[in-house]
Length: 85
Image (tube, rainbow, N blue to C red; front, top):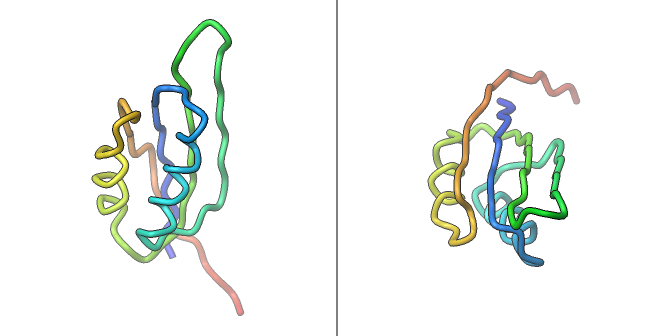
């Protein structure tokens, strides 16, 4: 399974995190880590999201970019992950 780290810049609104997580789940990606940073004097939020899937990360990238409140999505890096049973 491949892990991908995404950096997302979005307009801060109460539902933005829920929308991002819903799109991620619907596209078949498992969330491994999430970090969100919002400054008081800004109306934007920075989200670092680490996801895992066998699916190409471009599927998730294109769907996140379609969200109205998302300004930018950057794929930072990927790494393979061994899953043991």
